[in-house]
Image (cartoon, rainbow, N blue to C red; front, side, top):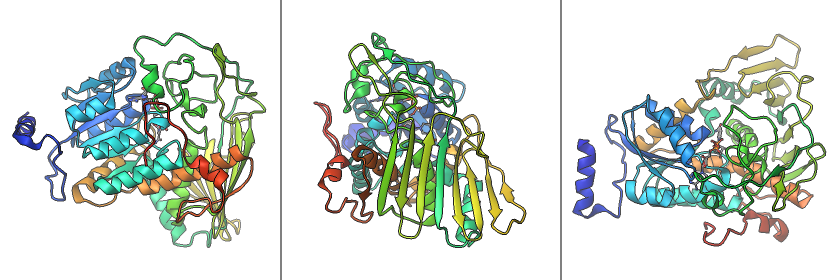
Length: 451
Ligand SMILES: NC(=O)c1ccc[n+]([C@@H]2O[C@H](COP(=O)([O-])OP(=O)(O)OC[C@H]3O[C@@H](n4cnc5c(N)ncnc54)[C@H](O)[C@@H]3O)[C@@H](O)[C@H]2O)c1
């Protein structure tokens, strides 16, 4: 309370246009004014870790669906005595609360604008992966973070997993010899033709126009109750189903793909591929449907992408049918292959090393936190330390950007139906105006694409 009074008196004294920057040497005990934009499933998980860190005073919650706000408030209740105010529009939240930390856990098409607005308002940002829906937005986020000197961390929490840090050390120490190939996959079971969902009235609690924001305004097709990690299912767009609608996200490649590509770039110290080719389609789900009365999702039901790096090849494979009983391990995994063997990284499992000489496998189990089954806690601790000491965080925006770019390049190749050459230093498609046009997309009237 005392600190809040101090801040308010500071505002009254004429500091209203700037937030006091956090500097190296800020007392460790002080709590940062923290706000959440996108109070859905994952936002609640990240917010819970912010509260658990003891370093955050939760001052604002923003969502375009008041049911999500109510659910997050119920979850927050037993965790903290803080009394955050509710907002529908993130611009109002930023202006009124002047948060020092902002968590952005909106759907993918809504990552860039709130992140950029937050750093412009002086906040440090924890934004979820993928960084953005198109490469141009993602690059603009990196620029904004650097221009305003803010810490912007991406939610690629696998970098903070103790068992994966150990695997990285082993691999960089020569466990496999030079890595020649990495195979990443996500194989989900089930799979059936997708029945179109009917257009239904927008519930009064939801501002559907603002949910769609800069992206196309699709007819609303209802939502399903929140439930743990969804399979391929036949789902409405909101909540959580947006992943399979290309207006708002980029299917599994743009979702789980980012986690694996981030691991590959981080472990092997790479910036990006030189050439990308992707193919895929919807032979099982069926052709997408979209009219005023009914619609299906439109992301591919399987996709293969190949990435040619200078020293190795990376592949991605996803499928929402057939399961993976024939393949060992988690439904999602990355396998690093070198002359001395294979290192298997499980999604929620640990890692296993299979020596090429047939010797006994070595493994380390995963060390994950509940209830989210990931390592957000460790990543949040790193974020706070980066803010306090003025260093780059473990999952810095530039790193999250590069991992997201891998996914987005795959989607561009899929759309073009051909391979693309990529210059990872200049972030350009050399001599390829057709691909270059897909670095960005038109925003809906009323919203300006970030530069
Ligand atoms: N790092 C990870 O492992 C991980 C895991 C899950 C989700 N995620 C990411 O988190 C994001 C959210 O996913 P989710 O599963 O929680 O989805 P969700 O649908 O449960 O939550 C998103 C929320 O954002 C709200 N929203 C939409 N537009 C908004 C706006 N303009 N302002 C404020 N709120 C808005 C929606 O109403 C919804 O409540 C996605 O980008 C996803 O990729 C990351």
